Amino acid sequence: MAKRSVISKITIYVFAICVFVYSFFPLYWIVISPLRGLTGFFENSTVLFPTAFDLTFFKNIWSETNFPIYFKNSFIVAGSTTLITIITATLIAYVLTRFKFRGKKFLLNSMLIGYMLPPMLLAIPLLGMFISMGIEDTLIGLTISHIAITLPFGVWMLNGFMDTVPFELEESAWVDGASRFQALYRVIFPLLIPGIISIGVFSFIVSFTDYTFGLMLVSSEANKTIPVGLAAIKESTSLQNGELLAGAAMIILPMVILFTFVTKYFIQGLTSGAVKG
Image (tube, rainbow, N blue to C red):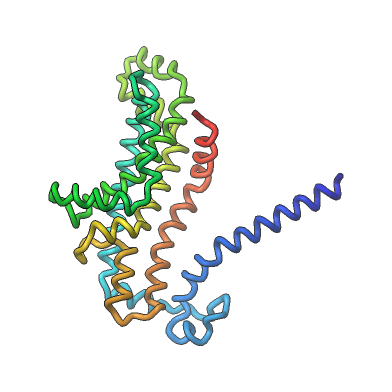
């Protein structure tokens, strides 16, 4: 039995390592390739570790293109999407779990329909709506389109968390003189932190890496985000793959930094949300 247990553990570790390498290696290659510099990019392209770190490709794409504008727009849209999704999803989930009204389950289930639809199917009617509202080709319209994807997921996840928070905690806060909003902010909100972080990470990644909505809803150079901007750079400039990989690396970097700080809470939120409700 002991021998089988050791073999099972070794097998699991080997499998986990293989999955990690398979998942991580493409990201590593994207980041490390532009750091080889102009000479090493072509001559040492198959070497796993660069012999020198050259930032020429990064400087080129940052100084010779509108990449700084794309980078700023991506952060504005992703940050706004994340903040609005967290606030709105929290309030909607609170209403769904604390108030009784007809059609509550239907409303919750119907919100997931928008999340399951391909982005292209949502982009076309949204574009028509934005044109009639006068917000086409704006960061505001792009943010709204991203929220249409992130909000249903946020409500669905937080609804499960809200159901597990005892109603007696709110009643105790009310007895102590707190308003409904104060009870939500001071008592319930801290208990939802794992779920809120999961929603925040999901919303930021979806918005920051979106290509479909950015391509369909934004046309001006001043409002493009990184994924669409990189495609435009490839088509309209003479920059080589090194600069494009440098741009892709700068997309990955915020994701890596984000996950470094919130991985623990993100996993806790996903696993907790899977069994709650």
